[in-house]
Image 1 (cartoon, one colour):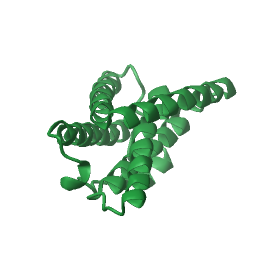
Image 2: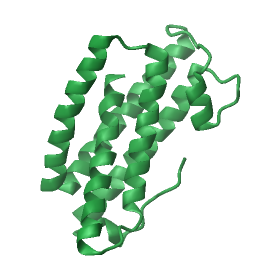
Image 3: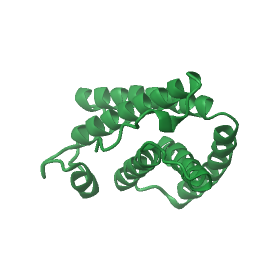
Image 4: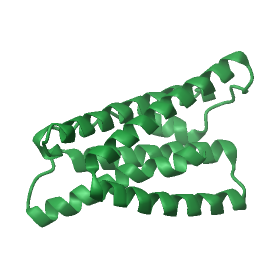
Length: 175
């Protein structure tokens, strides 16, 4: 759950900074504002789903607040200094998330983690069948993380080519 609390930060920071730049320079973003804010919203829904499953205690919520505050500011500074490095870092973090969710799926399949019914919030958000299970939820979350990985590596590659994001159309509308 802790990973999901910070996972929404990069999309929000990147989307916010691109939004402000677009306003300041009177330029279109090539869909990147929307793509990054979609990523942030999608990661928020991962967290809301995990909250339903885990039911965090008050001290865990306090820890979330502290970690999120530190990470937001650190990532904000990183993105201001080097968007290409920021997107690459997020791409690597998302690769780790894909791996973590793959391990989660293995634990469900082996019976180490009970394959309980999916929470209603997940069924509604991902339009899953009413009888969806935790395995179904983890599978769609892992697919989301793989998409975020690809989007962020793509964004970093654009920057490494000496271009701006607006010069390459953003992959939007995946959800």
